[in-house]
Amino acid sequence: MSDTPQHIYKVVFHNQGHIYEVYAHNIYQSDLYGFIEVEDYIFGTRSKLVVDPGEDKLRQEFDGVQRSFIPMHAVIRIDEVEKEGVAKVTDSTGSNVMPFPMHVPRDGGST
Image 1 (cartoon, rainbow, N blue to C red):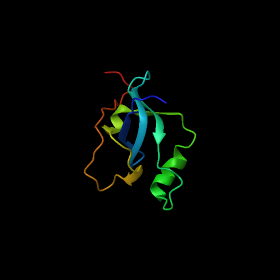
Image 2 (cartoon, rainbow, N blue to C red; image 1 turned 90 degrees about the vertical axis):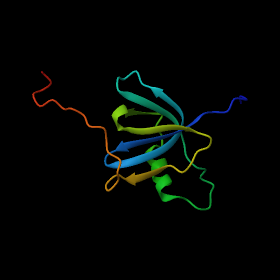
Image 3 (tube, helix red, strand yellow; image 1 turned 135 degrees about the vertical axis):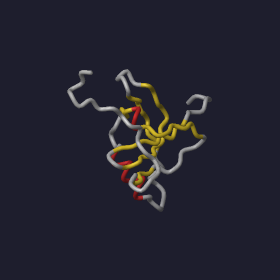
Image 4 (cartoon, rainbow, N blue to C red; image 1 turned 135 degrees about the horizontal axis):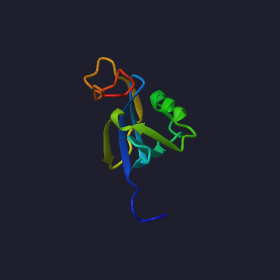
């Protein structure tokens, strides 16, 4: 084990009408253009007496995931934090958080 502390990042992003807040040790700009890579997710210990159902749902959703590729336009915020918090999913309806608008060509991409 090394003496240098591992970095902990809080990543908040949009996914299918929900806002995900997850914690991970590694975040990179991906070789896939327009994506970030999130690796080594952090969830609370399972030995707790009280289990948060929201965090448990996220733990199950990301179980077995080695790396996630998240589109940059879906990312709301990335923070480096001192310690991990509770991972959660919230509904984005009724929120004042709006995804970044994107231009979608109507004629198949020609200008």
